[in-house]
Image (cartoon, rainbow, N blue to C red; front, top):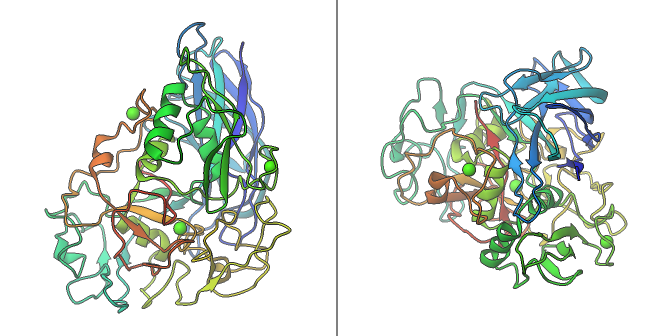
Length: 485
Ligand SMILES: [Ca+2]
Ligand SMILES: [Ca+2]
Ligand SMILES: [Ca+2]
């Protein structure tokens, strides 16, 4: 039986001018090797002044061959090298070299909602009787260009910062083809033990960055596209609890910082063929995936599971250099600045009537409003509204949300270690059959937590880097992904 599903990987949030974005992909129709579906999202932009960038929707497809009596994994669908299109003149489709998906974005300058267009994707082979799932997530183009690392040396006790040996900012340009540890940090215990080579992502070249952190809805789309064995691996080494996929309906699978995921439909272990179905129930009423069940909450993740998600979504981790560029853009560094470019900071407020709902918005109007030290998740991008500018929305120079606060942003880098093998290679979309991440280099890296979190205000300034290599989720660690070309 053919099943077609569409997964709204995120919905919400803002552009550089800000509001909730409501990405909606319509149910696809299938003909031969093509999929056709509608797309709409709010607060899209393409500008040539200021950040000179645009937002886009990263769309990828999973397919599942249906053979009775065997395990039927969802496989990342390779797209044809041509045959991708979108109707009208407002949007364009950008192919990527590995054909793992497409970016749909504005083709000409403009700001506002994309009200309706139709996308056609051509897969590399006929769909036949396969099941199909289409996933979309909002991303932001970070253009090629010079930028600075380091803010001049924020002097919070014990902190180390990006910058040169006297804490001064360092400009990254096209000429930055190698760096030694002493050239980008002020403490010997942090940074690459060998010189970083030209293949290391220093951030000069353009990349796409997820507009938000990985949300609960996105992670559910992932969990519910795994085989039983892959799900089993997730729960076993995640230690979220001792809840196998066979647990009874209603069993709590993950419960932390107000993210609550339960088993909606148990899997069947006797054959290991039928995976469980997971769902959100933040309001804990036993009714799943309601509007106020926290589907828009960013989800804390163990390091391994964050990496596995990025491989599955055909993205990759960002480096510390890319984090600073995504926050600051080409601007001159400001001492002690957060992602919005000033020292201001104000804490999210809890509003019981909309908490966890798609309408959750911060009504408290303050400079540098972000989710730090609250101990709970809030909807991704919920500081942004129709009246917020960059500093009020907590947006980066390029319009990326929650880069300060919410979950920590894991970035390649950290303790004195050899990071020279890390490159711009993106995940191939397929994780290991046992549920682990197949990107060996990623698994062997260490990661620095940047930007503070809802649990912990440590390292909350853009350039501070003293919170290293925490593989658990307990300090609300997770992050997001980027994609290179
Ligand atoms: Ca509920
Ligand atoms: Ca964050
Ligand atoms: Ca792989």
